Each structure stands twice: as structure tokens, then as C-alpha cells.
Amino acid sequence: MASNTNTTLVESIPEVIDSDKQKKSFIQRLVPSSSSAERRLLLKIDISVLIFASLGYFIKNLDQSNISSAYFAGMREDLGMYGNQLVHISSCWAAGYVIGQIPSNLLLTRVSPRYVIPVLELAWGLATLGTFAVKNVNQLFAIRFLVGLFESGFYPGMHFILGSWYGFVCVENISVLTTSNCLRYTPRELAKRSVAFGVAGTLGSVSSSFLQTATYKTLNGAHGLAGWRWLMIVDAAITFPVALLGFMCLPELPYNAKPTFILNKDDITLARDRMRAIGRKETEPWSREKLRRIFSSWYIWVLPIEYVLLANGGVQSPMQYWLKSFNLNPPPVPGKRFSVSQIQLLPLVGTPIGIICAFTFACISDGPLKGRRYPFIYYSAILHLALNTVWLSMPLYKNIPAHFAYFYLGAITGPAGSLTLNWITEITGGDTELRALCVALGNDLAYVVQAIMPNFVWKTVDFPRARTGYHYSLILQFVLILWTTLILFLLRRDRKKSAFRLKQNLEASRGASDSDISLTDLVSPGRSRPGNTV
Image (cartoon, rainbow, N blue to C red; front, top):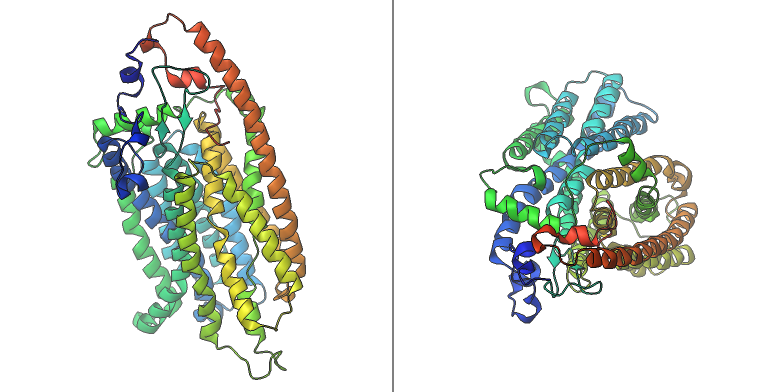
């Protein structure tokens, strides 16, 4: 090929080729983009996408979990609730959440995220605000359904948006294209951002009880309103500014983006070049052929199940149940008791441990593992198998310090959920609609299973031992290992087909002008090109 291939194909990232030979600062290693233009672009994307995503997910989980805090702070008595009505309220929320995920994610492929996501956030903020005025439990059922419906699009939608803006391509010897060294796809930005996004949601859930306590102490009875009603008002007041921030900052998808006060025209051009280099394609119109191609591929049938297995294979920690069981009469360990505050706070020690491990594993996945996600899925499954086996065999009330060590050790299973969605995003990167559908379908099906199976395998009366639940987890973790291996097999099979197709395309392109050849045309085995995941 002619020597102008370098400037034609990757003129926006000219330093990538020899980046391994260059000395890098700590920041350059953390954000492994080879040019200053890319580093500036990443900073701007972090400001416009990641900050909003993290704040929004924090608020979503805050608004999602506030109902439980309100229930124990007077809502039950005010509304005359009884029996399993709190469970029924959760079911109403779950029904809305399940219904809304797939349509909202597909809507993002047609309507700008700058409007879809903030509108959804405004809507669930209004529904949260409306909760303060409910007079009976039937009104609460309806309004929680709306909260779930409007919140449903945020988590899968933001994962779709993150996957549309973040990624990294390293091009080796681009002037000498061969089937073996044409591309090395290393998405070394996405995992760290996805984990930061997930951690924000965790902090939102944890913060709800603290916010309720502060609200109850300072506002209970103010203007004749109970503390739990003020909690809904405060949560809504926090939600609305974040939604407005989305209207201001959140960009469209790269191929449709227009300049904003954060991203200029050159930034958008570079972002498109980066996505084009790793095979992320523009949206396509829906057609019968499009649907046939999606539903005849293995991606749509296999990838969502991977996330379902991982999301449901974890255990529902028995730590609080175990701590509370010391207060039974007669006590299992005479003289040993835990206060209400200890029962609430001791399990939270695992949260910072989990956050540190999540960021560590994400950096390893983005860095030394060069974008590979599946090693941490195997790691998580194997660790769960070991921990579950230990729990089923250890006595409940002997060697109490060892039990604490066991519970906190469970926090190091890592960010396998975020990395799994990253993997799905990268595998389906060649088809925007398929990517949106797989991410939403995986999250949707996972939530359906989570809403049903705990009623049979994680029964409250079975804790703290919960033998049935732990055996259920063992089975799912074993299946997850097999399912991950199946995906790797299918990817390697597709990679061989891709190499053969690349060889044919290279031979056919002999003599063609370099300006007429794009890397994605050469290497793409179809609309759903796997990334460098094996």
C-alpha cells in the first residue's frame, strides 16, 4: 500500500503507532491516549458524559431506595399499610422498570440522548415529588409504577452512551497491513468509566438511609408534614438540577453530535474517527433485513444471558441476618449481642473495600489485560464458588472473627457486572441497534429473574444459613463459567472467519486508492464485529 495510509486512516491519532516506545507519565498511563488532542477530548467527554452519568445514577438509586427508608420512618402508619404491601409496592416499581428498558434504549438510537435521558429524569423526579402527597396505598402503587417506568431507561441507556463515546484503538504497522498485524483493538478507557458510574449508584443506595435520618431529625413535622414526606421533597429537589445539567451537557451520539459549549467541531470529528477506527458504526434504519440479521445472529441469544447469569449468581449477603440472630432469645452465643446501629453499619465496611477493588480491577482490565473483560468474569465466578462452599460448611456461631473476614472478603469479587456490559458493548460495537438491544435485554431479563427467584430460593425465613440460595448461586456460577467459555469459542470462530475475509478483501483491494479503503471495511466480518476480546 502507498505510504499515505497513515495520514488517511489515522491522521487524528498519529502518535499511536510508536506509543509503546515513548515514556509515559502517570496520567498518560491512566488515560492511555497517545495524543494531547485525545487526552483533551477524553477530559471533555468525562465532563459532559461521565459526570452527568454518575450524578444521575446516584440520584436514580437514591429515588429508588427511598421508599424503604420512608416505610420505616412513619409511612406505614400514615397510610395504614399492612401485610406484604411494601413488597407489592416494590413489585409495582419493578413492573414499570421491566416494561420501559428495551423501548427507551432503542429510542436512544433515534432520538438524541440529550433529550431522552434528562426528560426521563425529570419525569421520575416529578413522580418522586408526587409521592409526598399520596393519601392512600393505592395511590402509592400507581406512583411507584411511574417511578420505575421512568427510571428504567437510565442504567442501560447510560451504558449504551458510554460505549458510544469511549474506546481506544492501537494501530500497529499500519503502512504494512497484513491479516496478522492490521489492528489491535484495546478499549482501554471504558472499564474505569463504567466502574465510576456503578460506584455512584452504590453510593446513592447507601446514602438513602443517612439522608432519611437527617431529614427526619430536621424537618419532621415542619409545615405539618411527616419526615418521610419531606424525604420525597428533598430527593426531588436534588433530582431536578441534575436533569437540567443533562440538557446542558449531555451530547448526542458521536455520529450525530453537534458542537456544544464543551465539545467543539474538532472534538466531534476526532470522536467520530476514534469510533470509526474501532468499528463503531452509525445508526441504521430498521428494516426486515435488519431484524433478520439481528435475530439470526448468536449475539442476541447468547450475550444477554451472560449478564443474567452474572447478575443473579451472586449471593444476598446474610451478614445483617447473622448479626441480628445473636439477639434471639435464647441467644445462640450467651452474652454476645449487636445493637441496631451495629447491625446497620457493620455491613457497610464492605462498601469501600468493594469500591477499591472495583477500580483496581477496572484499571487492570483496561491496562495490562488490554481491554479483556472475561478474565474477571471467570475470577468472580470461581471466587463465588469458593466462598459459597465455605459458607455452607462453616458453623454459624464459631470463630466469629472468621465470619467477619468471610463477609468482607465477599466484597472483592470485583466489578464483574460493569465489565460484562462493557464486553457486550464491545462485542456488538459494529451494530448500534444490536448493541442497544443486547445491553437493555440483558439488564431487563436479569431484573425479571431477580424479581421472581428470590421468592423461592432466598426466603427471609431461611437466613442466615440460606442453604437453598447458596446452592442456587453455586449452580448459576458454574453455568456462568460454561457460558463464558461458549462466548469465547464463538468469538474465536468468528475471528477466524474475519481473518479469512480480511485476506480476501486485501487481495481484492490491490491497486485501489488508499483513500478509498477504510480499516473497518477491511476487517469487519459483518455488522456485529467482535472486538479484540480473546
